[in-house]
Image 1: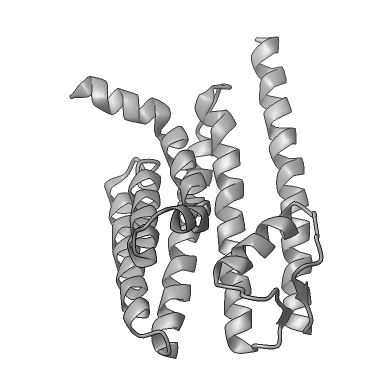
Image 2: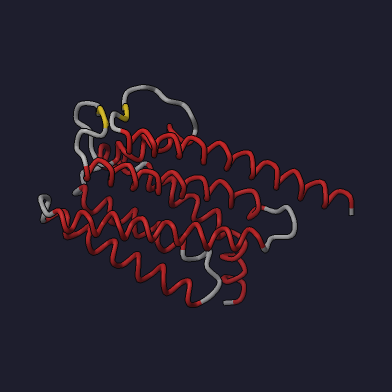
Length: 217
């Protein structure tokens, strides 16, 4: 039992990172599998919630992630049977934002307590970057909900398109296939661009600083 706990503690960031990558590949899973898309989305989302909760070391933090995760999964299921319900869509966006914001806060607190360069210190910032991209996707989808003319979207777009746009924004790639048209959408895109660049600069700075401190001892 103690060995299992130690193993989970040592590889909790890796497990969470793989689950989030798996979640981002959900459209591919749906395309190549014969399962109902609802099942695929819920399963992948559940894996993210369970694996990300491993990061939390305190019972209160775990409880919060489980409650938010359950509420998010519940409204996702309800949304599949009530596609036109605006109230359910709002609940999904709110709970999703709170859930991944909670993951980010827990992760930051964990990383601040790491005193040496190890696997967790390397994988943690990568996981945080993915959480940041997902939060941006939720915010972009929220702006589109408030104003359907906020973006010039590709043909056959889905909710996943906003998460795709979020990641190309924080990485400053900018393919041009999705374009923010209104002032709020452009403002959020600008903010995500800045946050993405500063995130990388800060992470690299902290990593180099700790590396120098370890080598100088």
